[in-house]
Length: 241
Image 1 (cartoon, helix red, strand yellow):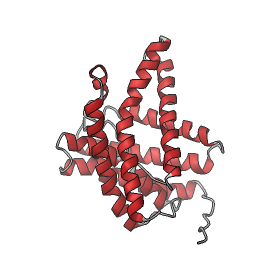
Image 2 (image 1 turned 90 degrees about the vertical axis):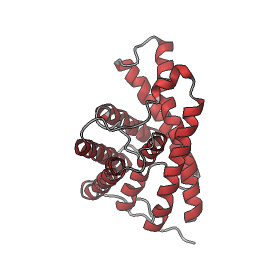
Image 3 (image 1 turned 90 degrees about the horizontal axis):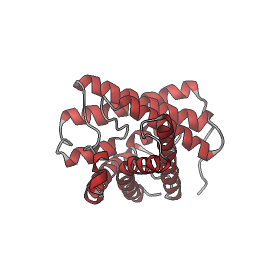
């Protein structure tokens, strides 16, 4: 896939992802109410994990069908650094990341417009800093490091079944979101954070870039470097022209 075409597809996929993420809470709540369980119970958590897995599976398949499109700059960075994304380059990422951020803005604006009033509570303005600046930056960096490390483990040492891989990543994602909620949201996805920050006019501040871009990129890079020592990646063969 050409760099420009790849960036455009990334932007569209990111828009779809940011639009869809708030619906995760909506669908989980609807299902929990239907089956008669509390949303914050163990059963409710199990429902949330499975809905998240369904969302992630859908977007993984769409991304694969689009030639490896991505909706998260942090995962692109970590896979590139680990040598698991041979089609990526510094130039392609320089094109993709701004378009992904624009896609995040479009997705956040769209879901804000169409979300029914009774479910608008799930929006909450997106990820936001709830603690001291440096504490939040460390938290977002560590959370991104952990989700990226989990991604490497599942890809390289996890089960062979693709659906089970996605389910395990959903477990990790939901767990980290719960753990990081009182710190930064969290986002673990700079493009998603940018979309919501744009709506509240926080997207150009140093605090925002420090917490939601710089530290996640550091965490994603460290996860890739550590995974090279912990997990042995299979050799990637170049495709013949």
